[in-house]
Image (tube, rainbow, N blue to C red; front, side, top):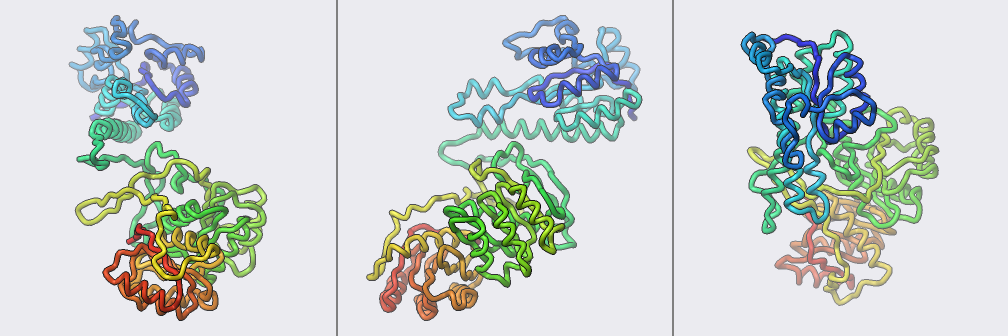
Length: 522
């Protein structure tokens, strides 16, 4: 059983003061008396909002540099009392306790503190909130009668209900309680993760991570599957999850997967770069001196596959690039870029036939933080690994053939090697003029991937360079590529038959580089 008590008293103690002034003013206008402490009280007083000091109510001073403020029976009794229990209401009356049906609390910035360079244990420990989580959990437990707000985004909905009759509904209180328990769980997880840090192993004994749902998608990979997208809280890097959508239909599950890959490739390529993704594999990618030129070269990598593709760019989309993409015969599902010029948005949303549908995703600067780990669910568990951001050092690469690599080929081989890491294994890419001209992906046999990449490249194969994401187990792929006109090879090396592969290159008088590093994408 529950009832909706009129909210006459509220306690507010927040670290994040976003939207607080407007919310508190709304509470005062609804006839709510506000009790507060420390910095929050001063913030409200400076905004000329009536507020009472908690210590005046409890008749107990703050102690220990603020460690002890709200942990008092007069506070928790007012939050935890059950309004439909005569004995509870009699007890608080006998002890001079006011009912406090509204609690507005968010917690000390622990994660932000420990993320700073050089933070000490003592500094981290002082950001472990005690009173805050206790207040939040108490109000959430007693949500049959108490309303808990722990995020500024919740303020408008609470005010909207209060303006009717000074009450909140049980449905809202239950929803807020769920959010509150999730909030304290994530907070405790962050603290536990901090104390579990092990210099000998980057993987904690228990993996804890909270995610916030951003959207329920139309469906998952297939129409019969449900789908949703969740955000990593406080992630500050460029991300499709937090991108600003400037145009087009809502993103699908597959759109997000493809755009994420497109963005990852574009940000990893040198100079001005564009990548074109179809079914989570690059069918085109290029670097050039201008974005429009890079875009055209990338789209020409595999024009058939590029129809209905998604595109990633590492520069602001300008008018010239937008004009190219509006060429009749081209069709683009979505574009992700750091930003779009006003002219580019105007062109892309008015000129092409697909103008109303194309998703334009502005992700912001690509220079920010990137996720440290990758994970993948398997039945009964989770695989976790460091993200493969390893920067290759060409000075450590070894030319293993009798024929040396010409200066003009070195840049091409570096480009091909960078592209290869984003293609599903067994991965083979052919590149020419710093653009992808043929890719073989996800085949069970590496020689099949070689043949597919040559077929895709067609008359552009002669003069191209070939990158393989793993060693060649047999020399047959070298003979196939040489027959097609490939001029140089780059691969990790490490096969028992490396010498046979090297001999095949020497037979054709073609150079081969061993990188000593594998970038395998399963």
